[in-house]
Amino acid sequence: MLRRVQRALQDLYNDAGYDEVIPPIVDRPETLNAGAGRFLADQTLVFSDPADAGLLAIRPDITPQIARIAATRLQHHDVLKLHYSGPVIHARPDARTGLRHQWQAGVECLGVPGCDGDLEILELAARSMLTAGFEQPVMMLGHMGLIHALVEGSQHEVETWVSHLSRRSPEDIETLLGNDRLDRERGTLLLDLASGVAGIDWLRTHAHSVSLLFEQASDELIRLHALARECLHGQVELVVDAAVLPRFLYHSGMVVQGFAARAAQPLLHGGRYDAMMHSHGRDMPATGFSFDLWSWLDAGAEV
Image (cartoon, rainbow, N blue to C red; front, side, top):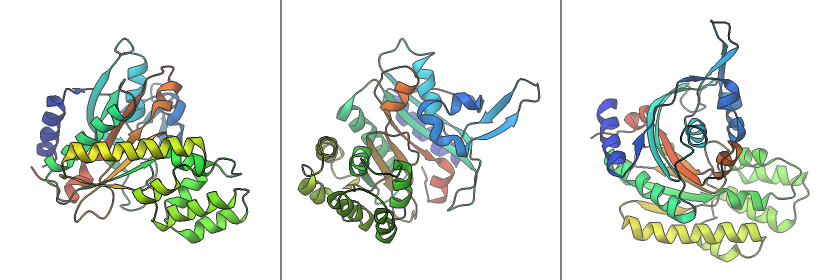
């Protein structure tokens, strides 16, 4: 079944003009964690090379490998559209499933800036869920610029805020605000995020009330939502939620999560990661999404 779903998705990506790339399962830990990939350091399984050549690591995520390939081996290409599929291993078991092994598949669109690239990725993510036979698919859209703008000036790192927001608990946010120097307006909006009320209408109301960064991220997300709705023609429900968070914190712009009927957890994650490309020495816009094929089979994927 995994191979049938995999082949159907590969056909979809090939027809969309994406080429397959096959990064190595084992790599140097400093390579896997370079730049924005540092957010994966605590999930990277490191071991001694039996050939006595230092340390090796098993990849916990494929996207940072794609970024490195695009910045080195494929640096002469202005636009790269790539897809992949292969195993990843996490150093720590997943909190929900208790598993460490995933079969990660996904696509990366590099060299296409702004809404154009994000829109292409959202359409392909929607078509992926439909190809896999999921019923009532939903994609939730957010933007990391909103989070960064709201916690600007905080004494806590953005990682701390993301960890608390992921729990969707206003009480946790109130506790964090209690010993922080953020102003009352930002604190109120962060509580809105944790309460699940930061949708498209909330965004339109508050877009111009925080900072220039918040305004730019809001305008970009509102425009992307409108364009994506036109593009998808109602095949997949699109929901804006400013509290949508990436799976890994190397994302810097639009973020997306995919859901479907009978799936209790997100089926796919993605977003824009221009900063990661910059950390690899190449100023190249980049956006994409990925998912665990094993989780898709458990959720009822079938072709």
